[in-house]
Image 1 (cartoon, rainbow, N blue to C red):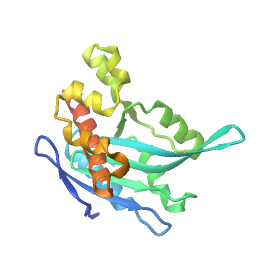
Image 2: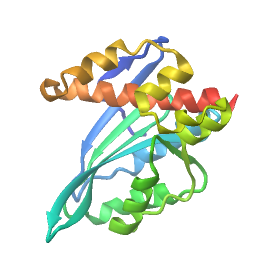
Image 3: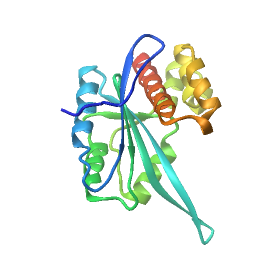
Image 4: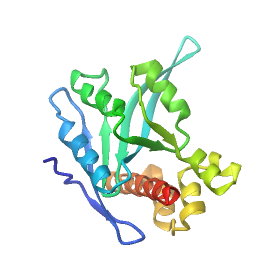
Length: 200
């Protein structure tokens, strides 16, 4: 079984999120970690995995070229951060299959453009996705909620203390690897809880 042996972080409600950051090379097997995330989302009953993607953008002849550089995947108890190789290697087929699963819903904040870029630039198709802002706007009857970022949306729905996340983000350029991993864990955990709250 995959070991999430990175730092663990306590959330504002006392929950614990264990992390793992992986720099993927051609010999890296990410399938055990993806399986562990699937197990956790099923075990917690809502079959949701929070995802966020990060891009490298180059301008070539007045046209932007987008390359997926990293992926963050979160469940209630885990946060997996994958730094991807350039160019992609064959072992990323596991990630392609993972995203194509109809068994879970991939939940994100303002993900529509990312879904298009994933398909156009890498042929990655996410079959079951949910824009959490749209769900929140419909559930709360407040259209403006659809356009909020992670922090603002979580604050509006959950009313949690955001001071730790604010502290990390205020000094982002100086933040170390563990601080950035903690911010990733907090953001994933917040969106997971927003989704959970809206499902009730």
